[in-house]
Image 1 (cartoon, rainbow, N blue to C red):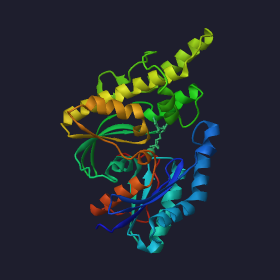
Image 2: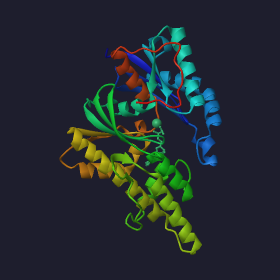
Image 3: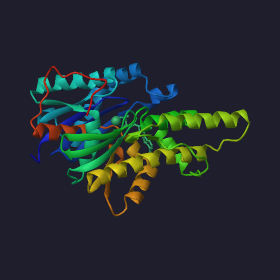
Image 4: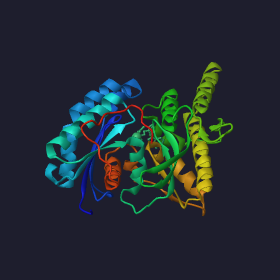
Length: 334
Ligand code: KG4
Ligand code: ZN
C-alpha cells in the first residue's frame, strides 16, 4: 500500500491541477496551472473561459505532474478526479479526461467531492488522524465539519448566504484591490488598524453555529459610500483590517464552540481562506491549551490535485469505485 500511486485531477474552478501522491499522503508532484490572468480583468471567474483554459491545459498539466514525480502512466494505480461541486463545464473537462485515462489504462477511477478534498489536504505530509474538527472556508463554502473518521462527516454549521472567500473577494473589489481578493486583503490588513471601524460580527441569531457574511459585505459598501458622499478619506488598509477582523472573529468563535461540543483534540483548517494569516494566528491564539491546531501546507489550502488524490486513496481503501457513468455536479453535498 505504501507504493500505491494515485493520480489526482482537479478542474472545478480556475486552477487546472494534477498531482501524483504515493500511499495516500506523500506528495510526489502537484502541478498547478492558474488561470487568474485570464479572469482578473473581469473581476471574477468567467465559467466559459475557465472551461476552455482547462481544455487547453489538462494534457500538459498531467504530463508535468508525471514528469515531476518521475513516473509514467503505466505506474499509476488509481485515478481520482473532482466531480463536484463547482463550475459544471470546468468539472467536465477533468471528469472526461479522467474517464478516458481510466478506460485506456484499465485502472480504477473515483469521483471526489471537492470539499472532502479540501479536508483531506490536512493529511498530506502529516500524521494527523481523525477524529478532529475542520473549518472549511473557501470561495464557495464555509462549513464547520466534524470529521469522525475517513469519509464520515457531520456538518455542524455553514453559511446562510455568502461564503467567507466570496466576502473577501467582493470586499476587495469594492476597495479596488483586485482579484482574487483574499490574499490582497490579507496583505493590506497588515498595515491597517483593525479597530478603526466596527463591522457587524457574522453570526446568525438563534442558529448557533451558522455564519452570515453578506451583512459585513454590505456594511463595508455602506461605509465606503458614506465616506465618498461626504468627501472623506478612506484608509483602505483600515477597512481591510477591520473587515478581516469581523470575518475571522466569527469563524474562530463558532469553530471553538463546535470543538468544545465535540470535545476534539485537534482543530484543522481547510480551503483557500485557510491561507489567511490573521485566521491562522487568531485560531492558534484562542485555541490556547484546549486544542491542537493543524494547517495544511500553504499551497495545499487553495485548489490543488494532491488533496483530491489523497481523498481518492482513502475512498479506494474503503472500497469505493466510480465507473464510466461518472458525471460532473455543480452542487454536491458532503
Ligand atoms: O479553495 P479555493 O482555492 O477555491 C474554492 O474552492 O473556492 O479558495 C479560493 C478562495 C478565494 O475566495 C480567495 O480570495 C480565498 O480563497 N483566499 C484567501 C486567502 N488566500 C485565498 N482569503 C483570505 N486570505 C487569504 N490569504
Ligand atoms: Zn476549493
